[in-house]
Length: 638
Image (cartoon, rainbow, N blue to C red; front, side, top):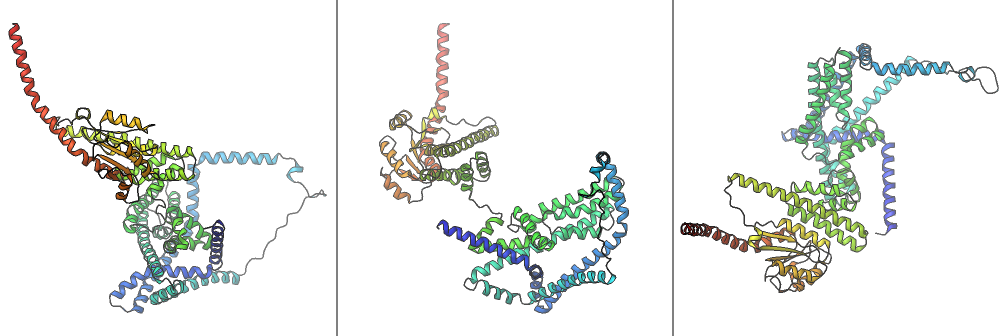
């Protein structure tokens, strides 16, 4: 896509978003009741389905469900109003007690504030008259202050204002109730019409989107309602036993405010805590109230929500907070309560509509990068520490060979490809290689420590009678990992040498050699049983073929392994292109190379072990004869 086309597409997208946001803001008087009705329909539809499965007709099932739901909501509102009516006359007394408690707890701060206040007052009294009361420009008289006093509102105006507010609330509630009832009665018809209107040419995608959104929102709202009701019930019971008045009101308030993500429970906790401070003479009741909310919130977040939500809503925590701020700015308090369900709907739309996939990226909690790309991205950004932490985290849950293949080999492949294309400088390329090398060395040291610990544990379990493994120097077995051309090949060879851990066999990763003669001399000196050539893309095939031709005849027949790491082509074709005979073994991953080398070395290791056992079995006889000869010599000398 050309830059001009991309710019035009981005401009069109931003303009569309601005138009949608403006429409949401201007039409909030219409959209808020409609949205409430839709979300309540999602919440009540499982109850309707359950009643219909009990052979109850559609209309009676909807009416029973709506009556039960809105009756419960009205009962809670009525109880809250009664509790607030009882609490209102006592508020001045509670306020005086709270002020006394705050004065006693903050005496030092209040005295300091009084000192600052008195100093400012003294400073203002010492100002000259001309500065303290300066007259109007051009006159020596002091200006007169003018106050505009509005006439008090008549009782009819007050009644009209209150009645209008109440009537507006009842009208909105009535509209929501009617919409919910009709949505529940005609829910299949409304769904089909919406699918035909939005996705006439892609009914499958639209149906999946609606089912996904309905399932997520319905489950989320139902579970959230259950958790909040349980939370409010526990708060009410706990505050009743602590001794706070109007415990029912605080329980209802806690259950209601907990619909506000993250901040709601602590807003609900502030009022009971303040009331506990106002009523009690000590600090026991406030501390018990704080502990009650902390324990209940921890239990809800760490036990109830993971158990009931399962995979949650799929929305990230940051997206929930940003959405809460956005919908509050757009629709006020109602938007704050509806922030999470609306965000879930937007997330589902982003999952199923390709043009709006950015919503899934911005709002979702799934990683946007694969593990290999995450590690490589951190290396490109120069953050070696975080890349090492990612590798360490994956090593805790995955085998080391799989971590090396899927992450570090992929990172080296991307680094080589991007450097050859000129995407970054040579210094950046060297930094990435050095970082990967240090990560591999660190993992190798940890692996050695782990193997040493396991070996000591096995020896201790055998009470010290375990047979010592045959040493590499005694057996004379050797495996060499050669680099095809560059440092990336050397690092991949280091990974393979760590994975091929064979008792009684010396495995060595040979550094990058400056000349082919050095490799040939090293092979003649070490006489390895298996040689593995490590070659990284994008020129892995060419470099491996050149080195194989130089090693022809110097490696035992059938014991040459060629690692074309991260190769995507057919390995049989790769073997034909290398052209060093059918006896070579071509692999594409470190795990395959590890398995192949172990298969090649297994007969040699068994032969070395049998020879060691024969040597151990014949050694006592030689020791006895030597002792007899020594005894004879001593008797002769005597």
